[in-house]
Length: 203
Image (tube, rainbow, N blue to C red; front, side):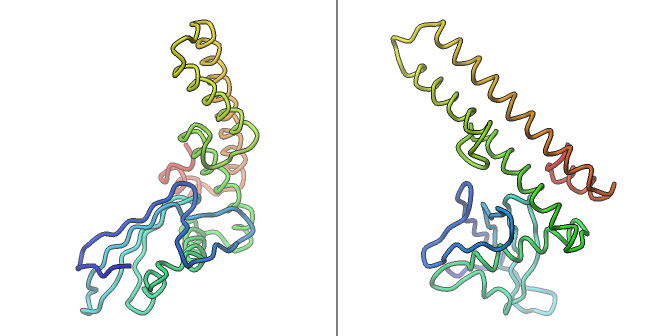
């Protein structure tokens, strides 16, 4: 990573999951958590020492925190950020933000991740996030509609049918999302639910 002036912001983004040359992707927990973007601002702390303000976004929502100069080693180097270490940090800080015990997190973490991945599938027309089941049907429906829209010889009835298929597939995927959100709510305290509503994971 190139050096940054105080206050400068560096953002790395890859839809779905972050992967950089020289950093092997390794499982960091028992569910499909991943970081989709990293925001880094280099600043000076109250004691005059260099710090890095970090914002991580991914399948567990968004987390912001500050790393001191020593801790910031996971952000740089010739191979780029240490994604495995950042993901572990991301998961742990997500757990603490929700004030969940390690045992509670074994249940909550996968459900939060599933919700975010379902949302990703809806936003991306089924290309990212969850890519099986209703999300695969959603993606297939969109591909069929897109192909018809590019075909100058396509008939109005065919386009209408394809559009209806998209709407039906979207409704099925949305229903799956709503059920996943309902399943998660059953496990939460009122405060935890409020935190996740504020983070747009629940509604």
